Amino acid sequence: MLKTSHPLLRRTALSAALLLTVSVSAPTLAADPEVDEQARQDGVPVTELRAFAEVLERVRGAYVQDVDEKELIQAAIRGMLMELDPHSSYLTPDQFEDLQSTTSGEFGGLGLEVTMEDGFVKVVSPIDDSPASRADIQAGDLILKIDDTFVKGLSLAEAVELMRGEAGSEVTLSVLSDGDEKPRPVTLKRDRIKVESVKSEVLEPGYGYLRVSQFQNNTGHEAKKALNELKAEGELSGLILDLRNNPGGVLGGAVEISDLFLDSGLIVYTQGRESESRNDYKANLGDEIEGLPLVVLVNGGSASASEIVAGALQDQGRAVVVGTRTFGKGSVQTVLPISGDNALKLTTARYYTPDGRSIQAEGIEPDIPVQVSSVELLKDQRPREADLPHHLLNQAQKEALEKGGEEPLASRDYPLSQALSILKGINLAERRRADREE
Image (cartoon, rainbow, N blue to C red):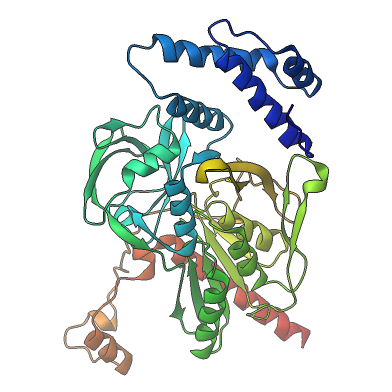
């Protein structure tokens, strides 16, 4: 008789023992009374396990061609995990290595963060400056076919494996976008994806822009460095934190980014099945921008760790969230090693914002909705000095002419231009309030 100290491990061991007993005794499938009785006492579904063993034996004995019993059992494991939720999966050693490489910031493929929906692969978000983003694949697109293989019936891990390959090789995806009547073929050349998780720039004097495209192990450190560089360029009056199309990543990165802008209080907590499994993550003293106005920009491709940051800063009243409702991936996955160098990626908890809101399947609703729009700027029809022939240029116009014209922000990124306008408005309101108090 197998015995273990932990109830879950003991139950698993008894299940394995029962499965082994009924499997090796096929075709009669005779039960071992001692194992059966102990299993029933521990709540093990004896009848269902015997049915599984019988199906395994029937397939092995009667299927049209020889099958590998080990492959059958692994397929059953994958099917069991697929039935739980879109994010639980069975990882081979290679898949486990790929998972670790994505958190370090470099991996091979197309640059897509994906999930499963109704049996199809759904794009959570394309990664910045990747083959997918350059091909204009958008968050929410469905992938129906990978080369000649239909996605329906594949696990997420199998679909991802088909999309990955040697850098320079090509793959053709059948992509269905929202509003399209039929899918379109998109041929992509695989590349070595190196994610620069943090970028920054000064949009206008005094207004900084911090882009976080993915949460990796070193994202918090990189973001703090970028903020210091922004502050070194001149006095800041406000900051935009851009989390659009950020699919998430490591929890620690999200906590560190939130902590950059908070002095205290709860950032996020996770809650598993048992009441004692709650874990709280709190902010430390020290706001890197010392309370300056902060706007967080999100969209439907902002998921998981991005939603943690947006939810924390929103609940604590530290930032105004602008954009569209986020993806709603509020579950925690834990990687559990098992025998044979394989692993389970298993959903073990849910994320909650400081106010106790569940992110799962809800997402973060922005304070100020801004839809993605195509903007064409119209000129005032009344003539101005600049419209007159041979008009004189001022010094700024001469410098701009020498550098070459740049497309207005509203034309190339409308939501960002709106976020900047909102940030300026917040800053103006706070300055006027401070002046009245003086």
